[in-house]
Structure formats: structure tokens, C-alpha cells
Amino acid sequence: MNDTGNNEKTVGTGTAKIIYFLYLASILIGITAIAGLIMAYVNRDDAADWLKSHYQFQIRTFWIGAMYLFIGVLLSQFIIGLLVLLFCLLWLIVRCARGIKYLDRRQAYPDPTGWMF
Image (tube, rainbow, N blue to C red; front, side, top):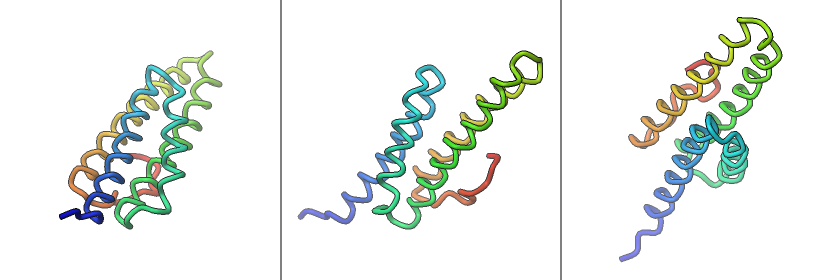
């Protein structure tokens, strides 16, 4: 008995989880976030509706995080820039942790278009 529908959902869930881990790995190896972004764009159209919210959330996490990072780097000559970079780091960790929590429960992310956590 091969239940391909269940297998497809498992694969999609695994891909979304890999993207979250790639984003977390980008804290040490920045290029992994770009790989995660590409994977999110590639997989979002073929996913179940609840999983699409995770891909949308991941795509927004990349672009909003890139904006926070850019602002932090621009302002890094001043103390405020270092605070922005620290906020960006904590923001990324919390967003990924919350995303993984909802993903493990097989629930849609509640507010995939939000800017904060």
C-alpha cells in the first residue's frame, strides 16, 4: 500500500523544515539563506494550502531580514547599528523557531505576512 498523498505532504514538510534550518545556518554561513529562498520560491506553488503559508512566511523572512541586515550594516558605525544587527539575529531565530513549531503541528503559519515574530 503506497499512500502517495501522505508521502507528498511529508516531502513538502521536510523541504519547509530544511529551509528553516538553512536560514538558521545562515547565521554562520550567509549563503545558505539564498539557497533556502530559492527552495521556498520553487516549492510554494505545489504545496498544500497550509504549507503555502510557511513558504510565504519564509520568503518574507528572507527579504525583511535582508532589509534589517542592510540597515544594520549601514548604521554599524554607530551603536544603533549594532543594536539593529542584534535585533535581526534574535528576530531570525524566533521566526524560524515559531515556524518549525507550527510546521511540526502541520498547521498553517498564523500571520505569514507579519513583520515581527
